[in-house]
Image (tube, rainbow, N blue to C red; front, side):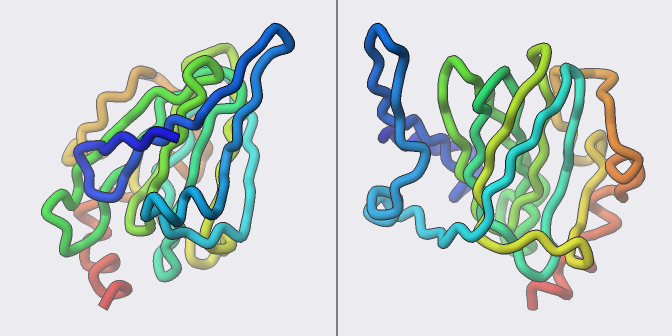
Length: 184
């Protein structure tokens, strides 16, 4: 397993060891002891799988009072995966980092709690699997508008397909006070 840092502290690209032969390939998507020994401390309690079509954009989502650490991987297809730092005291608050996750590169993105998360689908379709360190709670869900100009994410999809909910999220500046209050 190779771990690559990003421009945001704690947000890491994981390159699992892949064993290929004429039959195909094998890789471990998660190994508790290896992650712990690498300093990636997360107790994952929920696994999710989404299927999305080309041009779909999901996000930017987060849990307000029980932030989730996530381990994200594109099982099929290609996605542009994004995390936005929403930790109020972080020097990179409001900054984003994006990475291509694909069936080909088999990379994963380790997203610590305190980040908003989203992705868009670049291929015809994609299956995205991700682990979460806390259970999803709809009453605790928060979001930021995908096109927030103060964050200025350079999405590779200019006219995405969005859920009604994702179209109606506020800007990060409108959430700043709410995020600070819940983190104190």
